Length: 254
Length: 268
Image 1 (tube, rainbow over the protein chains, first blue to last red):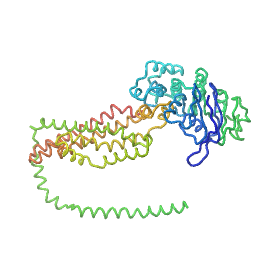
Image 2 (tube, rainbow over the protein chains, first blue to last red):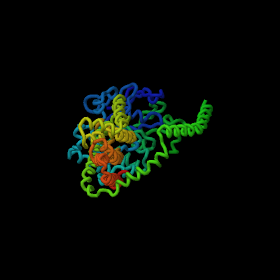
Image 3 (cartoon, each protein chain N blue to C red):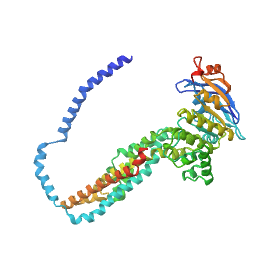
Image 4 (cartoon, rainbow over the protein chains, first blue to last red):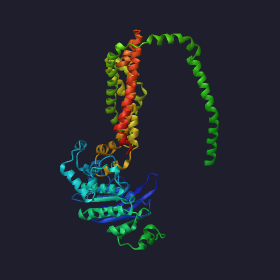
């Protein structure tokens, strides 16, 4: 469904971040991307929905019918691709001064004309689906609270609800639990897994906790020194962890 | 050679300690001489000053009520000037903010508008508009609207540049257009500072509109210059009392709104 070939990216100062990345993801897979900090995992994710433009290679999204080529798309084409690609951020990226339900409705913006959305004409049906999404992540009672007043875990669940009503084929999660306590992390990972299964969404999540990857992912991609060094089962051996994190990595210390 | 560089800058700072006070003193003395500041003149002129102030008392209370109308006109001028300035400034600020502006030439153009309107004094605009559309509050409103674009546009653009880019990116990542991202993620973040800036500008515009009245742009300032030209000094003092009330009122009103209406929001 998602095919990445020969993807590469350099920083403007010449530092290589990604070199000849090749992989593909099937519908409904839950892929965890692991690797040390600064190995280009986030950049890899951002290349998949055009928030970062890669220097070379191709990214093709083939969700329903026509394959969409992300690299080299013009802006209206890019919007079409992004509509099918949800994104969850480390810092949640909610509009803090707006209510929870208003934040959720942002997920529908890609499918609504600019003029219409400026006058806040979300259909009752859309608003209903927003409330259902909040119910699904267990925070329907918070729908009229100001988003900035919620805890981190609650804010990330609002962001998940925003992605649910977007109804994407692909969900990119950039360190979704890095700022959360262990309990909230488990909650968020549970929700990500369940929408991946229920809505048949392919999920790519950059994670920093190997044990969460083992528990929730169906597959692991290990990135090290700009390239993919591990691509396989989530049932990963300690030896393979050492390929990703280096020989000093100690699995039991986690 | 970082160490050497540090020594050079240290030396230059040490020289600056002596050079700056010397330059300051030279310019101060030069300015006093060339502008003709003279204590003698002030002492010799004191009887005239006392005479003038004496003529102003007592204030002419019979014109107090009729003068409230031009005072209201001054407030209306400032109000409309501010409203039109806001309408003009928001798009200019969006084009001038480096994180939102669509391209470099557009940004330079928008910043050009801001710099020009800010540096040309409102009184110069008022003189131009008075000669174009005639006496009265209308040229004053035009002058305030255009001059305020400079200051509002600059402060709005700075507020836009300080926003958290995360929510904007999140809105764009769902496939929303640039305009949608501005409306849903930029505007909510800048609203409190926009409101505070605008209220402050209204306050400033009330004072400016009094001065603009002196060049024929209506309101209480126009009454002040007329009273002075007609040697009606008793009326002048009444007008000064009214100006005091108007300025205090504008300050109080904008402060009240800032604290009681948006205060709570700004804290969050």
